[in-house]
Length: 174
Image 1 (cartoon, rainbow, N blue to C red):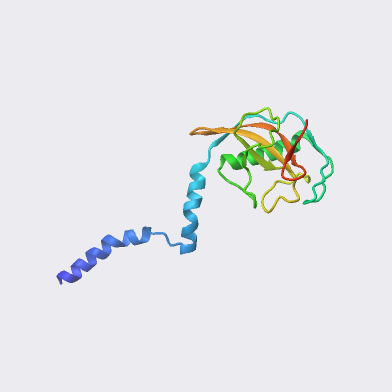
Image 2 (tube, rainbow, N blue to C red):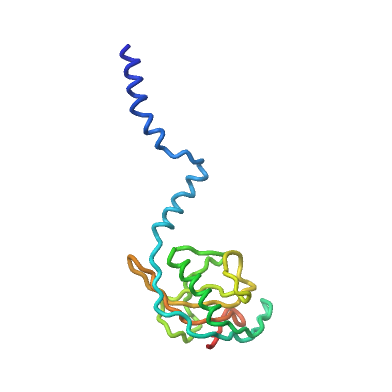
């Protein structure tokens, strides 16, 4: 009799705990921590400077890649790529095989009107948003400066550049 009463009491106390446990499969549980860290990393995006005009990237002939003709990007095209890249960065999210946006160290010494904390993000000739895949056929990048604090991810537009001969980038003047 006492055993039956103890068993009933234990079942009554433990049932709410077992119902509160997640019912996802082990594969779903493994993805959850990454999802939570991405949500926790979101910062409010603050834009200090947007593009003010278009840029023209020079023709390039790279023996390791296909040649790319001279290309004019409008202010709106540049703004679109800049805002997509900045939003990804503010949300601590990267896309594509090259994990864009990512830090740009400017080892070429390109003259951008910005400081040192730079990121790059692909700008596509067809005006589509870069979402996935490689960038072998996408030679151009939007560059922006970033700073962050506990609440905000602050960006300003710096310029557009293009993969030139070799591994170097070339500035695409306004």
